Length: 68
Image (cartoon, rainbow, N blue to C red; front, side, top):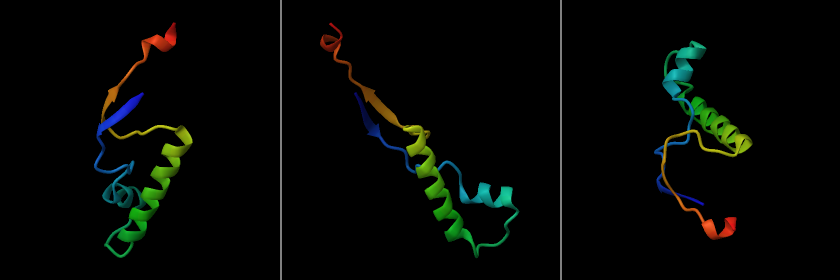
């Protein structure tokens, strides 16, 4: 079993600045929408892959009795 000790500050897989650079977007008019889209896409990717891609501190606990 894994227990998250220190969760990631954000689960987003990209930053708005990176997305804006890649898309060629200038200005701040679309920042809120870009942030929402990044959050939605990041959630979908994590759910589909059933894992977290962001670095977190975790503790693993193993029950060796269950292996017998």
